[in-house]
Amino acid sequence: MRSFVPKSYPKRLDRFYREDSKLWFSRLELRKQRSIYYFGLKGDTIPRLILIFDSDIKQSNFRLYGSEVLIRLEMDNINKIKNDFKLIYVNKEKYPNHYYLSIGQLYGGELSNNLELLILNHGCYHRNYLERMFKVALD
Image (cartoon, rainbow, N blue to C red; front, side, top):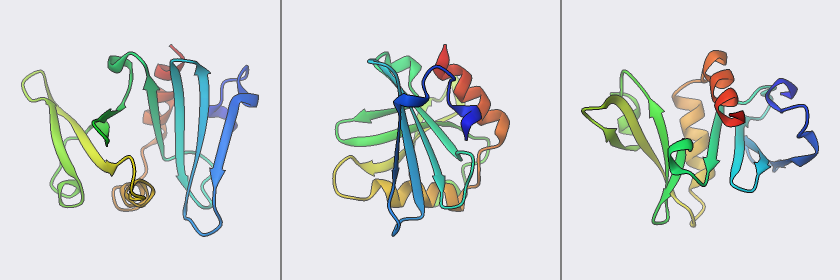
């Protein structure tokens, strides 16, 4: 996973993992207004999902809507994923393949289960996606 951590920031990387969970995540604070969140499953050596939080909402690929956590995704075929998650168009006319996927409420314990479901049932994001998200986070 070292290739996804900027060389000048490794000491700022916080890792989170519990033995009884399949999911792990790490948080890297780049600056006060921007953080990268890496997610994977037990045994993964590279993240399967990278989420960027920025105080500028246009720079984030996830956000809070009230207490609901939404992830912005680009997908051509939503038929399979819409059975597991609530989807909301970002802007149907301007971005027809972009959706907000609800992974649940901030409080209540369902976030890690839903992230695990997302990663397990809907595949691993390919390396080009991960590298692109990583570069976006550093801009």
